[in-house]
Image 1 (cartoon, rainbow, N blue to C red):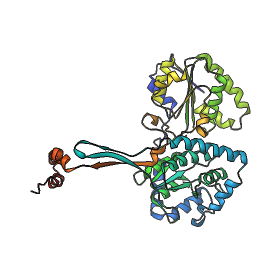
Image 2: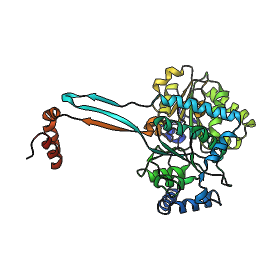
Image 3: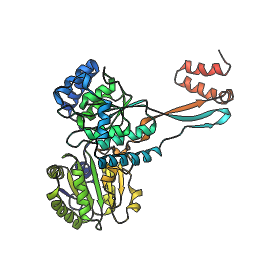
Image 4: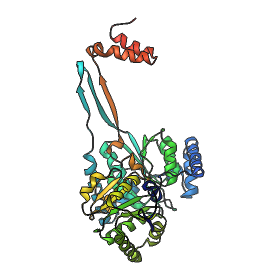
Length: 434
């Protein structure tokens, strides 16, 4: 892992933050141009383009008739799932649903001056598309983390797209999770053409109102290209964990969590920030021992070599400042008083408080969605939740008495902007038709 010492390197913390983070959507003009071409073609040719891209990239026997997974296949996946796996998926669904149901907002309407009523109401988005990656590590957990808050919000139609294997099969774990969630609309389609199909609609895949879920850089570019045609949740780049630790932290646990993060993919980001040089040395030794017995050790080593880092800071306070600049997807607080430190953390997608709380528990079961802001976007955005699947409408009702007291102000403001019809629409209600 790279070693960065703020005590010796004359670098501003912002520069170090740049060194250990990565934007969710990097500037890659060639890839962007390729994705825009794909999106335009799907918009124009619909099923024909989706099938051609699917045959070329995923499954040579793809056809419009086989894009949708049958309900019988979804049921069979759920029914034949190993009992322990089924119990784990049900437990995850239960915990995630219990968490998100607490966040369903209520409508509000209050009496205001002169008999006016002002407030808001929430309504669910009618249809949502969920993208579920299915590469070297298929993610049924991501399906749960996207679908459950949508269901809690009251979304009536949820369509799932997921890349097929080379033989055209959809991942059985993803299908089983869909079955347990009551999802019946699943398509074996991945990549930018899946995003474009959900956005515009094809003869086989009806359009949705919003698209959510993580994906690779090509999926992110596609989401960027269709934003405005449909809603999107955000751009999710390589997964990230930053561990802020002091000298009392257990190096074996930190090594285990860094390795867990690194096994996602070789471009994941795994960082330790600590004021303790001794802890860094012990973590390094623990990692070397741990990697002897892990199945994805090559991926982990590549990630730690290329994207991993240990940052030696002058103090825990400097570490907090660096963390807030990095705004990581996951932040673990492996310090003596983690709850005392919590109020000082301003920017993080998910904060894991205390040595007994690894990122894995939030990835799978704790409750909050693991679809979280990456690439320092936690500075201005949040993890996926119920409100991402709802719309807020303002509600306004005024009375003749309200107009008598305030109508002239509205009229003057409209005239200041040169909008005479606006002003007249108010005058007419005030009994002045001139």
